[in-house]
Length: 148
Image (cartoon, rainbow, N blue to C red):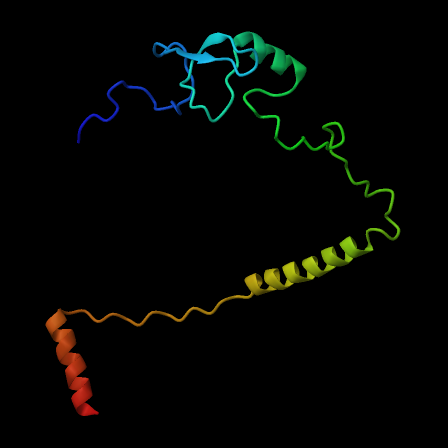
């Protein structure tokens, strides 16, 4: 087989932008906001607006999003990042009756499994093996069929 790992690296590169790997080609464009000429590190296709660095920075600071991303859904609020924890201690008297019932059923099933595993299993003793060659075994088998 050939040496597929020619650079002796472990293969962790998953693509993406890495400024140190190669020379970046800049492309000329017209800012969609102010109309000034600018250079961008990608080839503009005309499908999305292109902004100069000044307009891009102003839009990002204003929170409008970058590159037409302001049409995304707003983030959900999950209570300040701290998940709510259920308090099982406060409703021991009646709220946990269903949980207790389910645990009792589960314990019953586990008991059945343990009883099945504890039962001794009868193992049939293997038949004794006769000594001899394969030809002798075949002859014995055919002779026993002829006697019947």
